[in-house]
Image 1 (cartoon, rainbow, N blue to C red):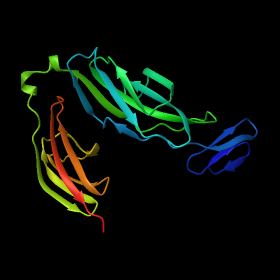
Image 2: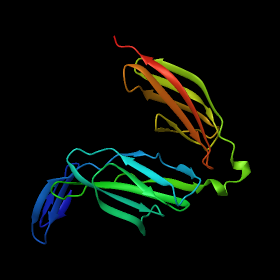
Image 3: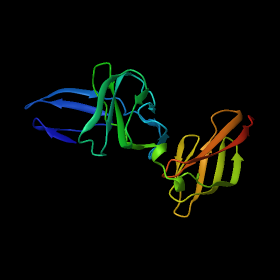
Image 4: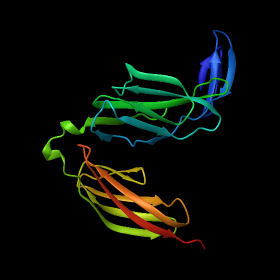
Length: 219
């Protein structure tokens, strides 16, 4: 509820009003904030040459969108923006030559009336040079799948990895318990043959990848 101009107005989800001193001048529906896709939160990019490498950021397209705004900052508070670009027409951008360090990013969208949506969630990624990695940090994390149980279009996966590792299954971030154990329930994308990729990444950027094949039958 918004109290303004001598009256109380109830807003529904994704509604926006503009108010002058004495009256409501417009009431519109705004687009939903984009859903971030890649990279997953806390992803470490290990590159040989930061000046030559590029970082790919991707989000889901929003129906009715005319353009997107991408913001990148060194702090999760976004006090000082490294990038604030509001004329992006695609949902996938390449950011070249980022120096080593941590970065935070978020996205909004504009409709054809130039009304901006709310901001997406904030995600963090890290760029680190392979040259600065110590020899002790070169060992990839352990990754063992203990149960892989297909059930219709779903697969239940449980296993163990290095405590504190970043774990994804088909790009979906999975929680890892303090002892390294994990359990995931993943929906297959299609009938027939599906290839499931499980990726564990430690804090130094080392990765271990496993692939499993699932056949989904139609009835």
